[in-house]
Image 1 (cartoon, rainbow, N blue to C red):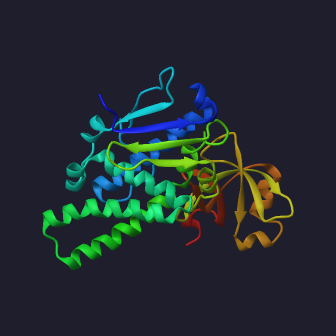
Image 2 (cartoon, rainbow, N blue to C red):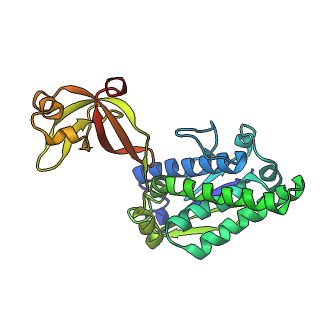
Image 3 (cartoon, rainbow, N blue to C red):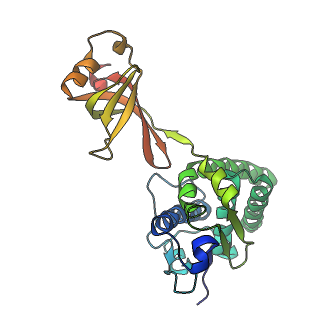
Length: 289
């Protein structure tokens, strides 16, 4: 059975039919997220929710001896998704291939190729517009919203893209990604390095959280705290609470005793990884109304 999508690693270790295991695993995780988010966005006309996935979105065969190609099948996965009319008519593999091409080329600054990939997706969407007999005004309004969402989603996919290109450089020279219809995407070392320099920070709303204080980061307005999402590891937290300027305060006392405190904070995520904590106030909202 012909695969819907193909990832082909070339050069370096791939010439001997090897790819370094850790980087290959990261590459799979990156592609899984990109393909999953692409299917959700293209199929449901909305941004994926945090952590949202569809089971069996990607069913990849392991590489066989003498091969550096990874086949991916979307056929079974398509039945699990409430795909839009246009995606069902034009084909999930072609749409996902254009979407992935847009992700990699946009994040690496290959603007002309990114524009071609977006134009291909828009052309496929026009089929739906004609089917639904939308007015020109309705189409333009919907298209503007869709473009805004597309760019917002791609910026959130910076870290998965970094994972996807992980083998390029340390293990292989390049990879190709393509569907049965869409043109192949080639990612070489300069492209991979450009993608690695990206990564947008996504900041949450203010939330109440209990933090275990480990101590001060000296000469800064920071505390060393246990990562609430990875117990046993630590992360620095910026303090923006004005009370910190008065000594002693709740933060100095907690640092001295390495105790827990309840604070109002915002979390900063870079591609689903907690990278920054900004403490805005101490205590629960009910105590600070």
